[in-house]
Length: 249
Image (cartoon, rainbow, N blue to C red; front, side):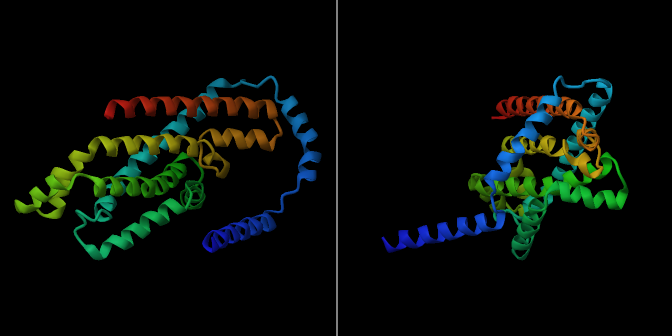
């Protein structure tokens, strides 16, 4: 009973602190609803003029996500092996590599893209690099956990036969886990599609660039058209990813 009361007190303290920091203001929200309704009313009908430009930006978004995820996979594979206990060739590297993966996952691709815009300039290349670093952390984490959860018997047999840990990982463990690894990769690709739609807000190309331009001009009918394209793109990526993952299991 005392333990439950202590946990309840901790929970109340956490939420109380969050409310004090955020300072929710319902009257201010209520006062702003008419302005929001006016903007939404002005968004109809959506403005799909220059549809070819929207499709070009959508293609940029898919390209950023696809190339970024591919580069992320190339970066993540050796890190995942180093972060998987059964095959990690150096135990001393296990926790540092895990920390590196957590760091990459903890910094959003939006932030990485902002940094790369400063380094390589505006455009989708910066977005691809930003996506790649963040996604490498996510893929490495998922892959390392899949490798650790795999059936240890084939791996132990390979090690007993004289294979090194790296050889056992390449020849036995990774092929055995390939469907799960590919499924995780597709899931991350689907997530990077969503991430890539807003990278243009920092000048990293894609649909976000069109969205930022429309918002800056207060062109809400154009904003609505772009949002419709973004939703359609995300839904298509979700359906394709789900279909491919079903084929892998």
